[in-house]
Image (cartoon, rainbow, N blue to C red):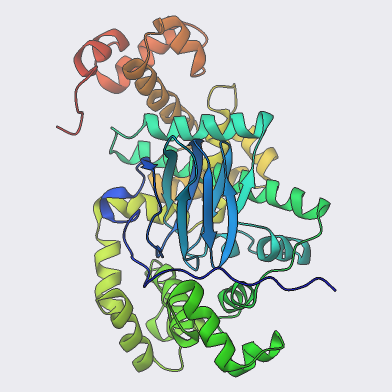
Length: 412
């Protein structure tokens, strides 16, 4: 039997809203770290890519090495500290995946193997070859749309986030199938257990017993690695689950309270306000009525829509149509047609067209590629058809668009 390793303690109470706030959703962030960061615990998921330098990150008391090509998916139940261990600063690219506990919700009908991979696989994978190139390309694509704030650009960015999650999970499962999982400390295992079984009647005594420990030791361990004791850890997980459920406008508050594991609506209201600062009703009103986030948040709550958008994003430069999407996604053409119309009031052909136009805009503003090369790159068979379509969308030619907006902040 392998010896259970000891946790690495954090120094001080974790800070929040370092990488997450309203202005950072759907934005590529770049950080240069030359020392050590304070313990951080966010209420959203983060995709992180190491571009330069090397160092380490402590996540829930477990240390992982950081090097070029390291790809991380940090969740709302992770408390982490990043340390640079090279002469040059660590350069990190970070984007927020606004979907609490998204790795657990990725599988609507999870298999035992998938659950094992999610629970036992590390939050850090090391990519090489075609996998690393693909992730680099996706991060670059994401960043190209940072100056665009319209729903169409949000659609593309959400598709990219979906692709990143798929790559991460596929790679994690592949590694998990080949390697025997290494033992993890008590705190690490307990936090993962709480994150999966938040809806049960959990107590420190019950969870500690599962791991051959006691409540006192478990509380001390959790405080050492995350800054929170058992009940605070459980409440944070339940609040994050409730925040996700509040995006569904037709879901009752009593059901959300029960689904999230709270004993009553009164307790739900009190704890939610304690952690979020507003009541569940106020939070729902803020989120649902926030115009900039409405399309984005609506999309991430639909697995079928995410599959459709990912397929459109992957194939926008090819000759694809509704029939191709139906075969690839195992969804009927009428289902795809209805889902897209209900969300966007348009059809699949226009989604492909929209992807092509948005990608062409990014290429026009960020490269010196000739118009013909851009046309072919985004899926048009000649510059004439591209220019005609672009002109129909923008009432100007691609060249005019490039001359007007190159180097200009389009939000102005």
